[in-house]
Amino acid sequence: MLTNPQKRFLRKNAHSLHPIFQVGKGGVTPNMVIQIAEALEARELIKVSILQNCEVPKEEVAETLSSRSGAELVQVIGRTIILYKESKK
Image (cartoon, rainbow, N blue to C red; front, side, top):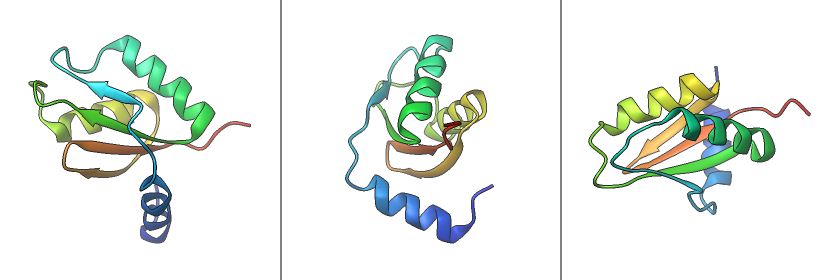
């Protein structure tokens, strides 16, 4: 569980990042979760964009991605999700 100062620090660092994944009409797929988990291992902090044609609510997408990939949900702002997971390296 992240503390508020940790989340603030991560939000500050994520500000300049561009989303590297997009969740669209198909919603969250198992393959997407695997790719996000691999990206989190390599980068630790990523942004995920939710397209307007996504039929699943953004809060549900955020919760699904964070729980299935083992990441911490830093923030959901608009249609953008910020995820963090400490690398094993």
